[in-house]
Length: 592
Image 1 (cartoon, rainbow, N blue to C red):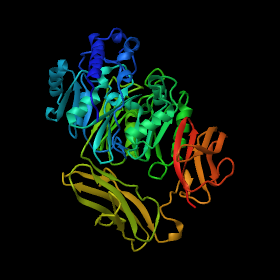
Image 2: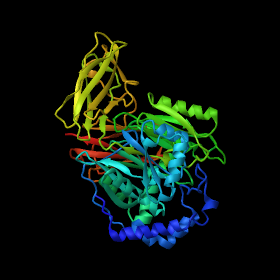
Image 3: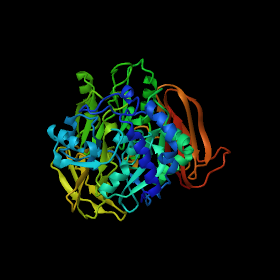
Image 4: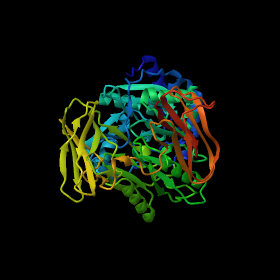
């Protein structure tokens, strides 16, 4: 648990005072991209200003990385919270870099936690109230602060091995010591333990699927090396130790300049759905974006099925800068999308989201401060329900032979409330919905029930729901009963046809395997690729591809031998692919 050491507190307060004394920071007015909504001050941009870089050089010994020792990480196993998991609040900052109509919609579902200095608190209250924000849904975090970028410096939430929530506090990759302390203060205000580490990172450069896969651009490696002296292996280990990230997929930069945050060009919408930016053909990122979208669609998500990739066209908002339509935020059953004032492209974007995330309420919000490098996602951060009821499920969507089909789900009440209801809802064709109790399987937090076979070939629909004593209700799909899963119960399919096997590309199949398995991936155009096998200790054992691959699907067979042709023992091995500026890791189990 985080412990604020007295000497460290003095150093950080001194550093913060140095920044705060410049009000505004010299040169800021010239560098600021925007003023706040109420015209109170020029806002620090998401990137460092020249004034900040000069301040950093003069005061770097006072910054957290120079003085902060890592706290012990949470108890393992750790699981990072995905953006779409149950939230009770959203963290923003005042003076605002967001429109008031967005806040009026936030307060319909969430408590709005507003980071504000004591000098601005009364002004914040009056302006929020006069603009129609429900003040019964507002809670102030009254602390000195530097900027609006709560996504980048705000708290990251995990659940530890006991199922208890914790906040992970990284070192903010800007010389903004007030902002850097906000996760600690949020933890204190919410009564959540905070675990700090000194590695530089930023929230806009982190996406997680809530299972075991997380992604960032190589900015994380570069800054950890330059600021913390950490190599890539050390970064990966820290991400595992503090966040439970087993597969950390770190990508090359997509842009030649800018802040290099992953949320400027791609976004997880759920465990197996990814939204990827699309741009006009002459833009310098056009080929790279197409290559990555094609590759992603050929790779498996944590669910075992391929990623479903959706593209959103980001038109030129001026100066060859694409609109940042991917920079949306998911909070419970709502997706809040930035818009840029072009009615045609704005509406087209909202339709892309509705198709990619059916059942969600998708709304657009125009604001003059949104630009190509940042928008809505950067300026707001979900506060997760510390007592959340979590329902996770890998859906059955492939054709099944005509026999009862077992549905399993992970259901866990993270608070002290007991589960009161775990149900499977199903129907054949357009019939009446039936309910069956999901019962414990003997595996912790796992429940199962059978959907009976129909009288003849028919389409089966189903969804899963759960409730706890605290009246929390969660489901899969997360927006059920507005949406449900479907598969074909086919009397012409026999048990020998391996029902449930993916019908699209399978990056490694069969798995487990003996004597061999095939790994496949696809490229939009010819490119360099490297595919290797490593063992469970991270040691290289086999190179399968190291060179140019043609456009289309590449398949490679591995027979369980190393580079010397020796047969490897039973165990878990990992494919590691580098292609299209992406790194991807997938387990393969050899059984003998």
